[in-house]
Length: 427
Image 1 (cartoon, rainbow, N blue to C red):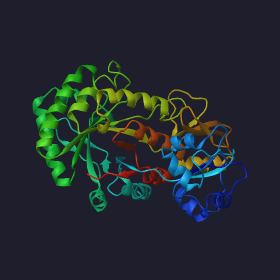
Image 2: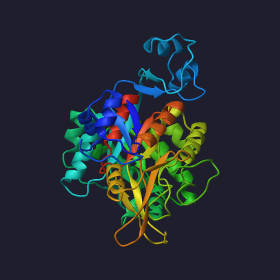
Image 3: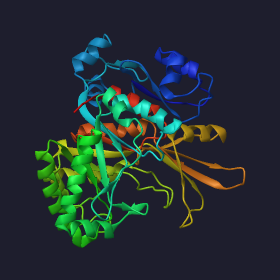
Image 4: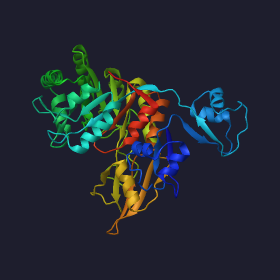
């Protein structure tokens, strides 16, 4: 699989010729029309086996082999070169595909009605062959310890058809927001906890869920140990009943980090009692804040490197956004940026004739434009390059896999890159 960044004047037909592919294949891989005008700076996934590399100043076969993680003799052999051959700058080398490692993938899905919308159905159909888990969001805890289920439509049948494990997401959402007060009420009562666990087990059995996923957020700092105690009790009960148990964690960089979203999430305890965790490594750039990358790789790395000191790497799933935001400038507190899919972002750049830039420090694409009313905008989103950078991090840190928030916005490149880099594990 090749990632190609469009240069000025290039057409999809020229790109296809360069890589020995076809315009139709490239268009299908990237969810565009073969007749589409390409955007300068747009990242295209080229659906070929392996990839090509053009020799840069200072390169050697040895350094290139190390860069792509393949044996030197193999690189030399496939390019019909001696292992000590000198390389001319600009020489095109074929890089054979590296071996794929197994990983798990989860995606949250948030149905808003009894029947899935056409856009959500399309997004689910794109994603489902590449998932280990599917997580309908969410089963909301009530004050009496019972649960309010989300609309599920035919998600159970779809998951079963693709050998995907259903993840039962249990949240302390009340009045459309995470409630510290609701969390305290449940965690402060053994009776309510037992009632809740009874409801969870009965509902999971009835609906075919195999993993129970606690996404309990915005807890009071003083409820940290109560939450730890509940998770220990839940793990013991759920494991005896044959279920997996997982949790969602805020993105922390140290055990001492405090705050209303952080203090009560104890990485060490979650790592001990849960089968795996999802760390929400996104929303640095968020809808209510100033324009910036949603999941810049530097902060993501720092969170995951800390997490590995408290939680076994094979229990950690990196959280990843499937969207970006379009901010109207200047940023004013109280305003809300518009969530946007990678496909829509590229269409915006095309519409306003803007080059897509790439921040190599954050590993994220972005561009700006002026709308018809004269307002300036900044768009940060995801593309094949930013996702590949995250996949490389997952492999480097030997993590369990990736969890996506959330389905509904089209990003076909992501699923192709999963196929290229990993074998999706099933449970």
